[in-house]
Amino acid sequence: MVQLLSPEGEYSVAPQYAEYAKLVQELSEADFLRFYRDMARIRRFDFEANALQRQGQLGLWIPAIGQEAAQIGSGYAVGHNDHIFPSYREHGVAITHGIDLMSILKMLRGVNHGGWNADETRFHLYAIVLGTQTLHATGYAMGVKFDGKVGTGNPAEDQAVITYVGDGATAEGEVSESFIFAANNQVPLVYFVQNNQWAISSPTHTQTRVPLFQRGTGFGVPGIRVDGNDVLACYAVTKKHMDEARAGNGPFLIEALTYRIGAHTSSDDPTKYRDSEEVEYWKARDPLVRLEKFLRRQGIGQDFFDEVEAAGEKLSEEIRSATFALKNPPAQNMFNYVYSEQHPLIEEQLAWLEAYEASFGDQSHLAVADPSQIPNIGSVH
Ligand SMILES: Cc1ncc(C[n+]2csc(CCOP(=O)(O)OP(=O)(O)O)c2C)c(N)n1
Image 1 (spheres, rainbow, N blue to C red):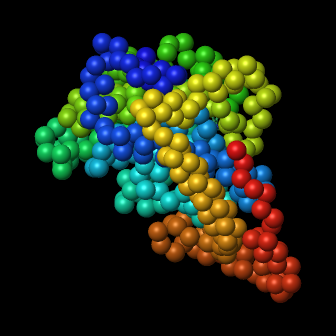
Image 2 (image 1 turned 90 degrees about the vertical axis):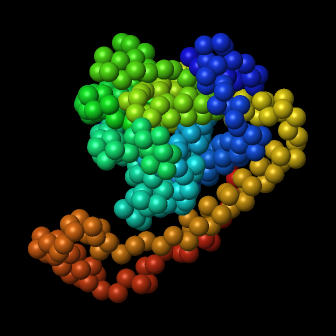
Image 3 (image 1 turned 135 degrees about the horizontal axis):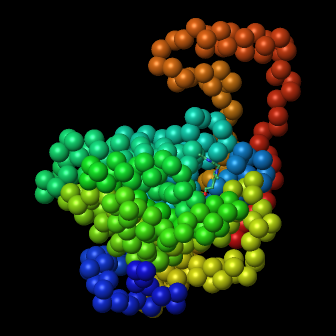
């Protein structure tokens, strides 16, 4: 397993991983601080979103606590032409590609169809149907390959694709199919498997007989395991294999070994199926604490951590007030974008809905109180 930062935040490189360490040496102190800022930002966002869900402001929350190093490290390793096909938990990767955090919350409140501009950000839409994104990514990477945008040596031309998939989802047939097409066509694709060790209540060992980094080997997709709680290793390993993919060396799989510290979603209670000792073991290997220890060893002072804390407070306030201010869209919006052109079935259903709503007469006296008047319960640590 590639590890560059120990849980105590010590930087050390085993000789066989020197090629990865070279990529870390190209980073500056500003990069390390940016990694920390974003990891802390996304964790704060996570706590806030969870609280908003509990207050009834969101329909669902999907936490990523514990997975910040895997997401921020790999996200920053994606190049300026590359495309990203996420699963549904990659809020950390999203912020490395300029996704506005409110677009994630709007989706989980159900006030839009779930989206952002994937053309601009190259961060494609979340995929809830497990494993499907690996096929989308493979298809996209086949297009890149057939358009000759691989291995030209021109950084303005060459492209690679990365797809994020969970440990459990690697057992889906779609993922095996994507391995076959990716390998046979030698497409520029990196599979980034976040092994957070649980697929809702199913532990990884019930999903595979081989370590996940070997999942693609028989299909022709080689792989490696990285410490998913070590942001520097996640950055370096992803950077190296995205570079290789862009250069035309075919698909590759990275298994980032991490842990889902929180629940699967706000609808799940993990105390029903896993031991608290296991959770405590992984909390002691918290990726954010590990990077903090490294930064303190590098001489980064308390001022920096205070500044990050203050930015977190500000973010929480912004997220809360922006969420409270969200308006419910007209129910008619659900018919938008079903077909590219008008369709008689949709017109009929829309007419039915309008007649149904009109049958209640004027409803304005039933309007709910202004949600911004809901008392502030304070931030959650
Ligand atoms: C095709 C399909 N089957 C089942 C589900 C229900 N489901 C949602 S998440 C999940 C577990 C996925 O676990 P994993 O791939 O390890 O990713 P994680 O949620 O841990 O990030 C399941 C079974 C689904 N969304 N899609």
